[in-house]
Length: 93
Image (cartoon, rainbow, N blue to C red; front, side, top):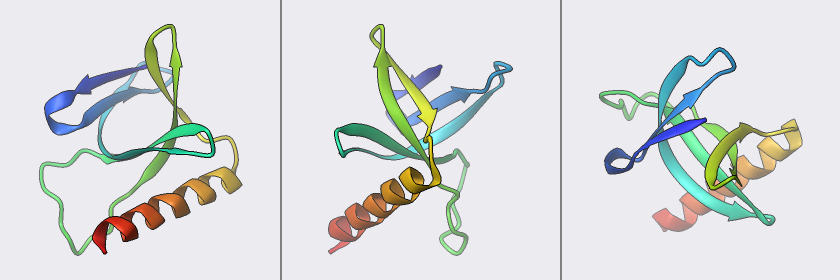
């Protein structure tokens, strides 16, 4: 389950115990016929010296609601993360 804050690209993700945590959406993109989101825990300030903790999630739609779910395999995680890095490099060129 997720709740959006459109102004800041923030999503609240809930665990199985219905505990919510806010994440900033870094990127959403299509890759291999699926949609993925790169998110990082929301912070008031980001220190450029400290690497971001990035989590890759698969985005699916169920009954008109977007569902964010963990990736099924480490291989998928690595592939999708490499695509994120490729997109970032392309964007920064």
